[in-house]
Image (cartoon, rainbow, N blue to C red):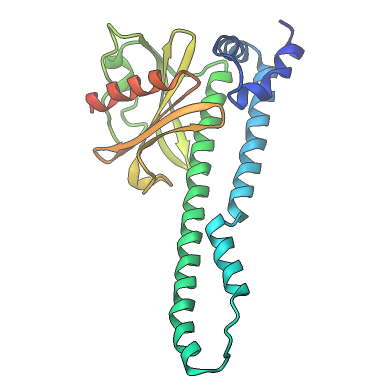
Length: 250
């Protein structure tokens, strides 16, 4: 299929709307075509910027309702002692509501920013001619390679006998913090595993959860002072299975 035809499917791919077979074929094409890979990365970055900007300034439904209710409320006896007494706790309640809404929106924006950056790292690695710096399916080769390159150590699961294959790893950065980027393969899908020190990045306080970000499934958790992210266009069941292997190896 010509590059023009693949590019027509990029938006659907990034939105997670392609059938799994088409998504796998397009993913394979991106790994071999630098021009299409660059186009995919550019569109991914534009989507991330637009989404982050929209969530930074969007007021929540509860916040809008509280403000509307406050403006609409008109006491029948302004200046009376009764309304002054009632107004104080009502004002405090509104301020607390505003503070809580602001905090929730800020955390949502931070979570989206982190997840979107990881999705970009995943796409950029797969689009690169050299997605990993240490090429090996042997965990006893890949793990020692990171010594001296990142300020922590971690364990890798034994995947022999499973559907997963370790392709290798590379050093990556999140918010200028170094971490490990591992790539696994299952059938025709590549899955990125990111490992960072939890206290050294913007990941502090992020919930341990499964999520669907842009066109990717993702799981994240903390374990032994490390924050793990598993990202890929494989099915949620495959992401969960690899996550379980990683948790057990820790």
